[in-house]
Structures are given as C-alpha cells and as structure tokens.
Length: 421
Ligand SMILES: O=C(O)CCC(=O)C(=O)O
Ligand SMILES: [Fe+2]
Image (tube, rainbow, N blue to C red; front, top):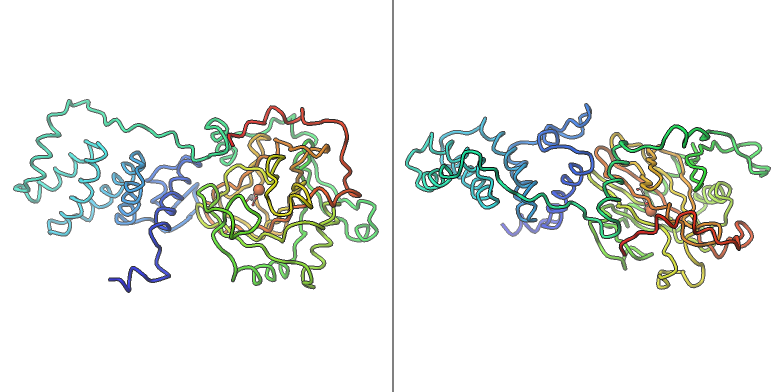
C-alpha cells in the first residue's frame, strides 16, 4: 500500500484538495452547477471527459473534508444520481450508499439521506441503520428544508466580497464597458519614430486609453516561445505570492499556477525579444526582474492583485535600488479554448489571451504613485493550458524614458484605493 500511496506521480492530499477547490472555483466564477461540470460540456464545448459516479463521490468527499457543506451536498447528490443507475443489490453497492449517506446525514441533507436509505431498504429491507435513519428522517416535517448556510465564498484576502463579485462577473463577460467608453478604441500601426519600426511597425490595439493599456499583436515568434519554455519547464514550480523569487514567497489559493524566473541576459536567442520589449514599451528593461514564465492548468487562476508593491513594501527584491514596478509587459504564449482571460475589474475589462501578443500597462501613475485602477487578475482556466511570460519594468532606470510628473495625479484612481491588506 505504501508503495502505491508514496508514488511521486500520484496526487498527494494537498493536490487532491487543490483540485477540488479548482472545481469549486470554476463553479463559483462561471456559475456552473455540478451536473454541468460533471457532464464535461461547458458552454457547448467539450472541456473534459464526463465524470463518473465515483469521480463525483471523490470530489464530494474532498469538499466534505474541506468543510464546504454546500458544495459537498451538490456533489454527493450528483454522485448518488449517477450511482443510482448502476446500483445493484450486492454488498459493495450498499457499502457505497452507506458512505454517501453518512456524509449527507452529517451535513444535514435530510432529503438525499432519505432517498439513499429508501434505495438501500428496497434491496435489503432488514438493513438496521437504514431503517433507523428512515424512521427518524420521516419524523421531520414534510416541508423540512435543509438549512446549509451558504458560506460567503470570498477566498480573497485582498479585496471585498463586492469587488470580488465584480471580478467574477468581468471574467464571465457579464460586466462590460459602455459603448461610449469604448468608442475611441482602435487598432493602428506604430513606429514611435524608431527607424527599425518604420520598416516593421508594431500592430497596436488600444484596449484602454486612461489608464493606458495596449495589446501588441504578433510580437512573439514560435521559436522564442519554444526556447523560453524549454529553458523554463525543468525549473517550473508551484507559484507563490509576495516575493520576487519563487523560493521565498508563500503558496496560496490566491494564485494557483506554476512558474519560474528565467534569465535573459547573455541568451542570444532572446536578444531580439528583449530589444522588441524595449521598443514596444519605450522603456528600458534595465533593473527588471528575470522573465517570469507561468502556466495555469484547468481551474488555475490568479486573483485580483497589483503587480506594483506600493510605498509600504521596501523589502521586495530590488526595491531599494530599482524602485517599484512601473509597468507590466505580459506575453500570451498560448491560445485558450475557454476561460483564462486577464480581468481588470475596476475597468470592467476582460482581455482574451491570444498567442503571440503582449499586453502592456502601467501600474504607476505618471507621478510614480500607485495607480489603483491597475488591479488585475488571471480568471480561472476552464479548458486549455495557459502560458504567459511576464516582464516587469522598474521605475528608477526609466529616468530618460518616462520622466516622473511632479504634479500629484493620484486623484485619478483614489476611489479604487480599497485593498483590504
Ligand atoms: O494570468 C494572467 O492573465 C495575469 C497574470 C498576472 O497578473 C501576473 O502574473 O502577475
Ligand atoms: Fe499581475
């Protein structure tokens, strides 16, 4: 048994509960019920294979262990529904029903427990425990409603439940900007007075004019993606939050991706890419951290957060010498089938990943103060594998590129200064 349970390629307890949470996250974010999730067909697209009764039961068991009574109820009901069609009168079948009933009873799901006991008694009328349970459950008033309090699902430590709901609605594309807010958005070729770009201009798509958020199309070669992935994949680890190096931060459900920091200095295969980043951002990459390569699988996400640290964080690597992260350049290195957009909840903006593009935005106002509108997130991935490459430019080396404005412009985003921590 030990040889089986200790196998490295088998999920450990933490991985099992993380995958249960990933399903719940998909349910919460995209308003999906257990029946839809277990069918494997989401929004008309086959996202995964349909789940069997024992898949549903394992998930129910994980959620039971995690104490999420609402979702436990939903998944155990689904498991029972599916198992009912397979049910035979043998001992093993009855023991499976007993396992489910013990949990449904414990979470006060009287109706499901009663249904299960009746199923057991049909094939084994002298089943004592089922008889006792049935007798008790039948004493409950006919209109007895189980009262499982719906927990306020808000795993975010950063933002309020209300802002979290907005974020989820933006992920679902339910909240959008008004036509007048997007009327001036456009695509254009840009050369930025750069002789090289005159020959090969960038294709720029303006996503937001204030704060400035742009997307550059076709700016990452497949060969560069392959090179970066080959170089990074052997080092990729579960992502952490709160530190510049993957080893120092902490694992958290806030960010369930895998990532690593990859060096670009001295790498000839990345020389042109780095030059391109500087041409696109019109900033220097000097002082930046290494390139972060990150991957999200099904249910993987990164909750709303800021890339900059703000004035109260001086311990972050390079903060003293290079200053805060003035801007972010984020490449999409894969296309996605469903989910996985980048959401800017305060701007009601949802950017769909397109392989080979780079999204660029400022995290700081022109004054160098934090722009609270830059709150953003990676929505949970439903289907596909999402790869991104992040480059964070630092403010101090930008002296000659983006000079600080002396005028205080923090009023522009002050109303969004409402982080919890
Ligand atoms: O995955 C995304 O779309 C956003 C990622 C992100 O914000 C980050 O890595 O800092
Ligand atoms: Fe970010």
